[in-house]
Figure 1 (cartoon, rainbow, N blue to C red):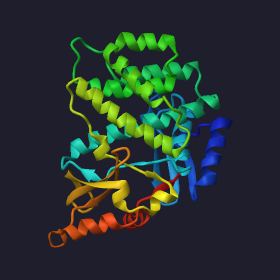
Figure 2 (figure 1 turned 60 degrees about the horizontal axis):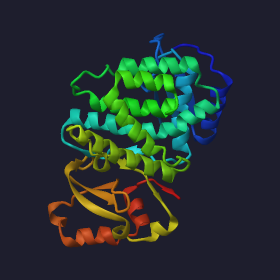
Figure 3 (figure 1 turned 90 degrees about the horizontal axis):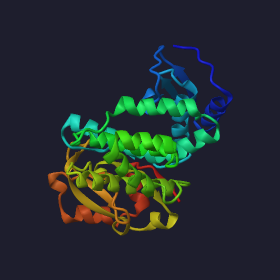
Length: 319
């Protein structure tokens, strides 16, 4: 493990995280690798009971990479919505791919907050911007003509790049447009959609995540590619008012009988779809044969939203 000295901005972020977390959060710099580029897979947070280790595995830009991960943790601790995966397609490899894609889209919207904070604290400079471009080039190859089957990854990477650079960086825009003309044009549309309104609260974060899930699928379908269907596959924490907590489940959610299975019970899953935005908001198992009666569903629908969340031990955020 390397003994890396972090700068004062990262130290104050680490202190802020430790103030909010009931245990201890530490940074760990692992190995000696310096790839020469920055990418968001160069750090991960590992929780063990009341300890979180933020492990940085690439030392190209330790302050940038550590601060990025700490800001994600800070958002969680401040009550921003989380992404969960409670259902399975039945194919492990496909599940892993979908989880990766869903998490990346969720992170892209979160980066509207994370990157803004990093820039505010002087943690992104010209050198980091150059290293980030190298990270893009290490992730996606230039578009061939006709396009290949890597368009999903290009769209994902370039939408996140626009969040990082903003859409006013002419030099970067010209480079990305030259190397990835089709994907970059599509990424600009997605970026415009998620920046229409600021992400300044848990509610606006959730709203933009759902908007991106839908628009991403719409773009894939325009290209003749299969949608990833995150509105069903991924559960996003609910952001509700006190009034909504008192409503009956039927007023806020619709139970959708999914073709997928509940990871916990291995039975067919019912997905609680939010009637307002169409997003998976909780998952329950299909009843056992003995319980599979209309009364079972009536009982779920008749619970108050608060009672259901308690029963499912489902965290939620108050507006």
